[in-house]
Image (tube, rainbow, N blue to C red):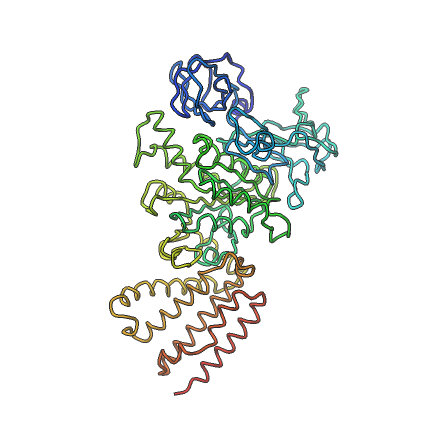
Length: 597
């Protein structure tokens, strides 16, 4: 980043900062005049000092999107420019916090004013009074630069917060010492030469619309293990990858995202509730603090940041919430952590853009969405990735899982289609499967992942040499079932050749034993890949033995009567599944060998 760019991002605007005045108001869009401003400067609007952001400059007229309700403000009221872009406070205390779209901590606001947020209220994103125990990791005299780790703070019992050198600092460490500090106190002094001293605090600020830099971007060659069979086996997501999970109302988007947040092998979880219904967001806010982290046995909130922006909150803040979340995720990625970011849902974010765009009287694109919808979505998803951060040789990653809520479940609508252009993993939720109580209701015929080829070496090395072939065989059987079901609807299953009847039975076993998973069962809620592989192999073993029995002349009705395979379903819910599955395999082989004409 060039020095001029740094100064533009991180310094206060020194130009004329006299107040402008409100000229026109249209919902969250306010036009001010006689205001000296740059694009994306944060301004304070009206006598109540509502927070807003400059989104258009035309001559002496400045267009501002306000992050709060504009009811009651009127033309002529003052508008003040802060000279800074919309930024977030980054430092210890982010984890366990619940923020709104512009990083105001909701717990703090609730204590001050109850359950309803008043307009014009501001609160810092971090606790500026709390003291943190700082442990230096470098010594006086060492050279440091942007992104280097200078020390650690125990942020939660689960996560050590690594203190990073800010973007505009480089030089030799002149002073650093251990102790207890607030986020505003100096923990390190860096000498850049010519008596140019930089004071480093535990906290830094970063503009949300500017991606944080990294040293090198790596290929997505390690899977994000989610513990959900349908994802890990058939449609895997790489660490640093991006996935879309579209589906209509009631198909299970929120439960799926909660499962991913709880069980994925990410170090940090950032959950953005963007424009969701209030009751759904309430469930998330009440359930997450009580969820137990399976890795540590402690609260899942110890490694989670929640951003809540419900559908009745100001529309402009909904648009900002996505940027706030990804910036926090990038900050932890730069420490060398693997971050999973859940955005629920990007459709509401796109609707916010559409509303703002219409008030700006911009030329609408498809279905009224702005013409730059695809660009905005791409800019967001491109901030994912597996990287080597600037200040450490450890790898960090951000995996983005964006929920999409297409009206009526129509995947041809613009948000879903534009999301598909930039994501490599598509987990399509199906309302019909949900109605049949098949959960997760992922449609295995319309979903896809482009990561299996790059992830195959990892699965071959860590799970089994024939992992890829076994998964491919299962998918071929499921696709064959779909073709046969069209015939069954016309003539019935009894009219099919016996080999095809057997294919239908094996496909049913794959659906019920592998694809289905009970999120509320303490054992089945999480399934490690090795257990998934054992389930696949025993189903394929049954298929192999049954086909051989057919070739020996046995009827399919005789084969289907064999009982050993029925125990596989019970093994899914048993902690000692290895022994059970091995016993079932032996029993199955014994049954087939005992078949007599």
